[in-house]
Image (cartoon, rainbow, N blue to C red):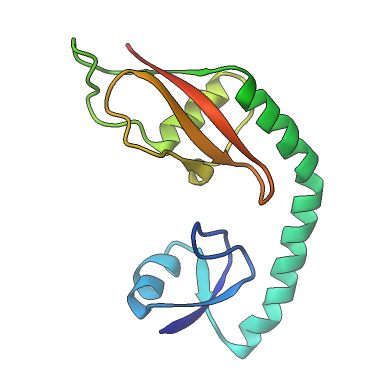
Length: 149
């Protein structure tokens, strides 16, 4: 098991500044190369306090903004235009980055694609819902209207 310090929020693992133990391969091949974590050292442990302080400062400033954005996202459906066949089956699937781009195009603000969670694979046209984590305490449900282009 490897001990790492998270520098970003990782779903199911923790938030920035947390010290967690994960399997060696997960840390070596995924978390560290993508910048989500750094290996634990005594010097790195001193940085944990500064990481947590920065996270808390961002959270207090953005809590009200996150609540306003959640209300806007839940208020109206987002139209997502994708390539589809005659039967309504998509050429590929809808990805979280597609949802983030559609939300921004609809004028509802920008969201991070890593914060979008799709409960199922979207492979056909129709109405779907996506969860967006805007803050630790605030999440929004976005209604998606997937239509063929």
